[in-house]
Image 1: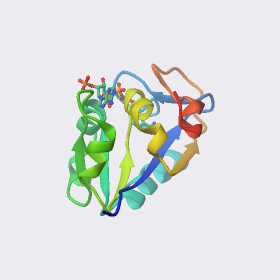
Image 2: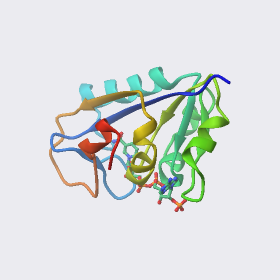
Image 3: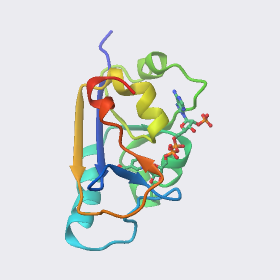
Length: 134
Ligand SMILES: NC(=O)c1ccc[n+]([C@@H]2O[C@H](COP(=O)([O-])OP(=O)(O)OC[C@H]3O[C@@H](n4cnc5c(N)ncnc54)[C@H](OP(=O)(O)O)[C@@H]3O)[C@@H](O)[C@H]2O)c1
């Protein structure tokens, strides 16, 4: 059976900031790099599967729920078995960090945009994910 193609597209701040209080740390920033990054995320994931933890899925805006398949993963679910549901599809692993910890070893392509943001965060990118670990 054809396997899922497993990718990540995410955005980080200058020091690896990923999230703050359940949102993107730069949420609401309308300056060009941030607006372009969100648009690019929705372009790249259009038509594909976006698999993520419950908080990340809850933060996907209504308009973006129609042209990509959203799938909530829980810690009780086995990553290999979960991906088996999506044979032949492109699956984007959308985070947050515990989800990337569990799926990093299965990812074939990381697309990481480093934004100009350099403020606080409570969720951080772990570079070990890029080599399949955590
Ligand atoms: N900058 C970016 O590109 C980006 C991308 C994504 C998220 N974020 C940010 O990250 C934050 C949300 O992430 P979060 O981690 O707090 O919440 P989350 O998205 O709900 O992801 C974490 C949850 O996923 C579940 N999970 C599913 N599979 C798992 C597994 N195999 N192992 C462990 N846990 C698993 C766990 O919940 P259960 O135990 O309840 O199942 C865990 O608490 C927000 O601030 C968001 O904006 C940023």
